[in-house]
Length: 188
Image 1: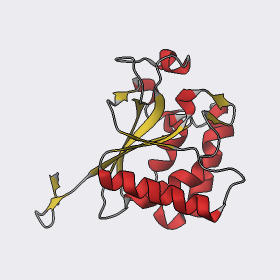
Image 2: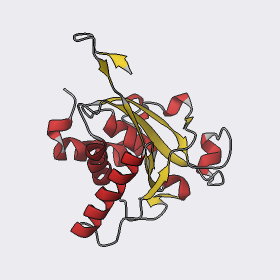
Image 3: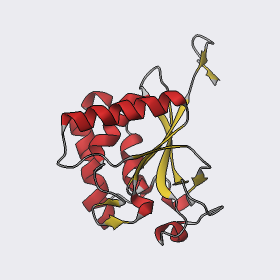
Image 4: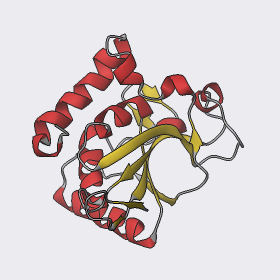
């Protein structure tokens, strides 16, 4: 908890941890979202202590590439984060996003409270009922476990490497999709 400089009233910050393919994509989008104060790329949901990127990419650690968001719930709700999350990746493909294949690229919501779990299950049920996709959502909803921060060169990857081919072909279209669909939620 921190103090609001103007009112000296404590402001509450929440954490959300999401997996939806390559963490570079999620990080680039959520960096631009109002109410999201920080985004860290990392790994969660596996069994190997202190995993490194190459170990995670090899698929043997059980970890997913995730982003850990610190957000202000007075500005953006957890459900609003999930609305964006479900637009910027395909939640119906098991252990895959495009050409990224393996359990490390699974779709997952790692909840930090019973309220987040309930919200995730409610959003998934609503989206499945709406039949927006040809197949049901396979997003894992699991309790948050140890978060392992990814290596430094993975942090703010898109911001530092916008012309790298993967960023141009995969990350940039997701950022544009977010900006177009959620213009009112883009930071100025």
